[in-house]
Length: 63
Image (cartoon, rainbow, N blue to C red; front, side):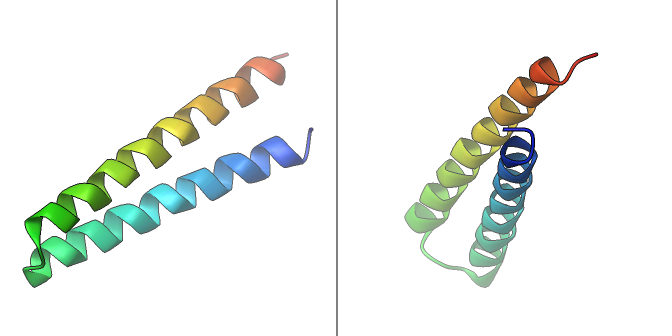
């Protein structure tokens, strides 16, 4: 668990960043607004997951 949780936090952060960049490029390119909105909703889910995992990480490894 000591190795898995930090890796999951990093993966969630990278997923958030990747989704954010993809959504911004999609909107800048003039893609379908509904699709861009869906991409940004995925970003919110990834961001919430990253924050939850980070909170759990901080609570478990607090000294």
